[in-house]
Amino acid sequence: MAKFSEKLGYALGDAAAGGITWKVMSIAFPLFFTNIFGLTVADTATLMLVARLFDVVTDPLMGALADRTQSRWGTYRPWLIFGAIPLGVVFALLLHTPELGPVGKRIYAYSLYLLMMAVYTAVNVPYGSLLGVMTADDNEKNQFSSYRMVGAYAMGFITLLSFPYLQKMVGGSAAHQYSVLGVILGALAALGTLACGLLTKERLKPVRAEKFSFKPFADLFRNKPWIYLTLIGICTNFFNGFRYAVAGYLLEYCLHGDVTISGLIINYTVFMTFGEVTCMIFGGLSPAFTKWAGSKKRAFRIAALICAATSVGFFFIPMDPKYIWLMIAMVILTSVGIGLYSPLLWSMYADVADYATEKNGTSSTGLIFSSGTMSQKFGSAISGALVALLLGVAGFVSGTDPATGQTVVTITNEASVCQMIWNLFSIFPAIIALIIVLLLHLYPIKK
Image (cartoon, rainbow, N blue to C red; front, top):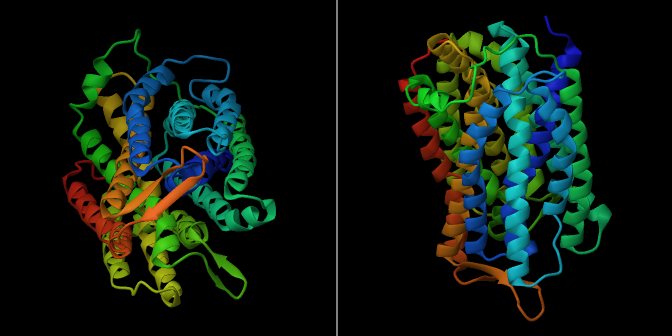
């Protein structure tokens, strides 16, 4: 039976990766790159697409490499211990806006973003794989997975809620604020990752293949549960990706800037914070909800239907700041569904890894879990790129003035841009949630 300190340590791993680095990359980066850093909409879309699709290749390779790692710290933990500092440093550099022209900024952004994806993969794939070797007990796997989600959402809540107040405290230009916050958040991410590597234990020994081969990769595509779960994982990140990527634009253009109520600054990070705390609460309730539902599959399906219904509900809210609390209420209700299904996804990857080991005779835990992070990045890549491209089609134009180096944003069709933003936050996610329900119907493992 694992101690509380180990469960807390495992939670800190996703507090660092999911609650800080990935949360900021998902929510703040699209708006940061177009409105502060000074990339064009096309450059931003291409950056997010190319850099994250790069991970579609590197994630499985990292999984296979992690599965074959042997050290005094175990199989997966050394990647967290020694990858913690690079993760924090590269993240901080990525939020810095250099004094360069359009071409220089493009090169800087692409280079750092690719490097960030590589470092994130080197840390997060082994982190996910840890769940498969810390315990053989299915109920305890659910507990670890639940702790993981609570850690991610709790830190996401802290990060997003504090963001506008930290910006105000730092002062200066928006570029300066993001640069300083990058250093602070990067240091916290490094500490959380290191603590996870030091506090967790690997109790199970992976059944290793004797030498490297491409057979495990081929086996994946004969593994029906893996195929459906990977598609489900991609869709969950489509769902989150559209909402996170467009939230900044929603506050900026549909509601005409931050909304201040009784001293509370509701900017785009605070707007999504209400969802984070809801996800944290219902992520903790997910094991009990799953037990009530009778299976992970049925619990996931109910949660996805909640997400579909509430996303449609958001569409019908008037696009007016005076309805901000109604919007927040709908974000909270949507996050009930997200919180309930998020721990289930990773627990189901552990089921798929067990299925693969039983079927093939050797462990491919790292490879299986790497597909989880791969689907996370693939879903976020496509949704983030689509958000930028569709905003461009609707009439949003951004870039850097070659003469002054200043960021320039122009809206050629305000009504069209606002409606596109609204749809990307509501109707697009609703459609994705219904696709998840269909895929769950086809998923064959009935645990």
